Image (cartoon, rainbow, N blue to C red; front, top):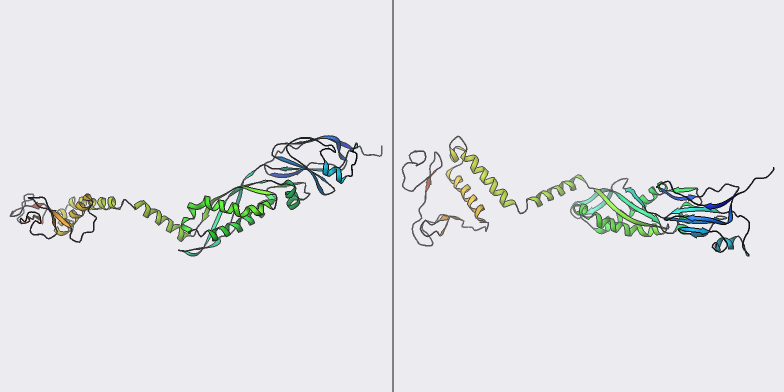
Length: 346
């Protein structure tokens, strides 16, 4: 017939089948034209842009829009339609996703330097996730995707990484957080980085909806210091119990030694008495650091007896001291000539 039949678009709609498409240009063939009164359907979390002659004309939010001169003020002006139009017209339609793109990954390609008050200059690595969304579709088109057929999140990942890592380095340097305390400050660090990158995202017509630090890789020496601090914290407050258990175990092992009690275990009477005193002090909570420790109580008035006392400071009576059998370690009453336990002569 010698002519190409024009295809008149009566309905324009885009159902996004992907999870990573930010911008999609509606497929307009060379012969495709938009019909007067065409229905432009924009779904939730979408924005549609009409582009004519390389210029952004009208922007439409979610809903059904009938394309006429009444709701295309900019395009009507660009096309010089003074009294409305009756014939089809040419224009490109771009859909922009305004939903949140979540679980975007970021991380340092190499470790970054930071100064720590205790460890000096150290190098750390970090990684995490973030989410973003388009808040100004026209600005995003002008600054980023231009007139590409479509635009996906993969095209922005590396660019976002450079923005994030540079601002993460800045935050770590200015926050002056000790390397040991960094694992407990992930939320605070993430909030600070989110604030820092907001200006860079805003210039692109975007906003960072969420930012998270998942891990910061510290040098081995710092990791060891954290482990030691955790161990010390676990022992804090339980050191008395630990001492009591260790002392009780030592006495038990000595008593069970087949060589003959405390002496057979290689400890003398004095050491045995010292162990007994340690147990008494631990059980009685005697940790006052007194330079004249108590060694017992008076048999008559029960007054505590200072170490080495020969007379009771309470009643004045002579202190009755008992000895120990050198064979079995059993206590021997004063004046006894034989051990009442094993019968050995004292």
